[in-house]
Image (cartoon, rainbow, N blue to C red; front, side):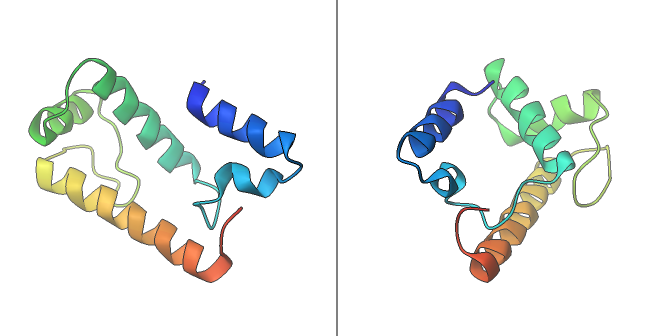
Length: 100
């Protein structure tokens, strides 16, 4: 699906070091995080980049936030959800290192 990620994974396999395919993660993404990333990529793909407009698009889709579970998005909520997810990934990286 993502050519860049696919290429990284292929290169990691080519070097017989598959852990390097996702070296910046301390854990696998949760299903709701994967869905959030996919929704954001779809929205960004339409040329929408402003947080208020992205939040409006998520609200239109009734997309459930990974952390709060809310579906009425604001720019601040988008920021908070992204920051919370990043903090969770940073925590996992600190605990487990790279290559999850």
